[in-house]
Amino acid sequence: MNILTTGANGQLGMSIRKNAPSYPGHRFTFTDFEELDITDFEKVKEFLSVNKFDVLINCAAYTAVDKAEEEKEKAQMLNVTAARDLARLTKMFNVFLIHISTDFIFDGKKKHAYTEEDQPNPLSVYGKTKADGENTIIDNAGNAAIIRTSWLYSEYGDNFLKTIIRLASERESLNIVDDQTGTPTYATDLAKFILDVMPNMTQAKGVGTYHYSNEGETSWYGFAKAIVKIKGISCAIYPIPTREYPLPATRPAFSVMSKEKIKSEFGVTIPTWENSLRECIAGL
Image 1: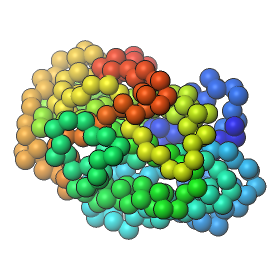
Image 2: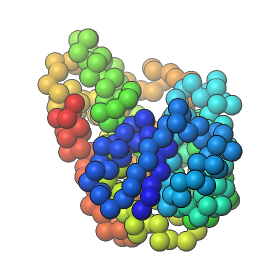
Image 3: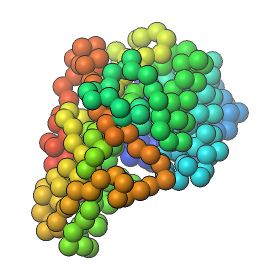
Image 4: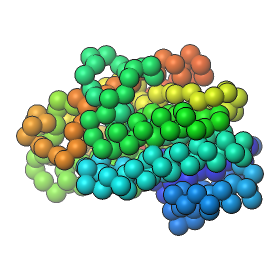
């Protein structure tokens, strides 16, 4: 397969790039904003016309959750308008689109894992634009897969893991929110999942929606405690409620996602978040 990955300098894009050599049967092209601005319809159209891709993995997104509350137009442009254009163009050129979405499309009111059939009800501008992006792909794409993930971290870029390591190394204690529950996801695991199932996934017709995160659940406090323990940093971690750490964007209180669909359809085994966290920290 001839595969284009957009947003290739982000966490997931870099993780796909890292793992691509393990899939010698495919030819990969990696672009980010500098090489291909996905908000420029005509440039993307020309790029797809010239290169004849089989699959486009769209890792590009506006992901600054709190900043999106102010920069609504930027979030809308990247998460909705560009997603719509990619859907239309991949349909035009018969390219299978794999689009990455998020657990932030849910309102967090459920008490057990969200399935792909649960109704989105986002609480933030970021979540709303990602939900609208999903809808515009459903409305405009030919054949596509939407993959929702959660609490992504990696060796690359800025993320919760690296922030906690930095702050814990500088301070004697940290207060971390303990009333938001979800699942940390190692970007390398998600990248491998996409590349492993891609030959089967791309055989499907229409638009399918899937959930992928690591196994298990925790709070941001639990995640932070695990990070400092594995890293061996002597910093005390204290739990606090969300109300003591107010942020511009409202987060879902519970956003654990069910992976039963991908397990049954693709027969995948998913690592626990704790084991993947150890693997990522060992590679830092």
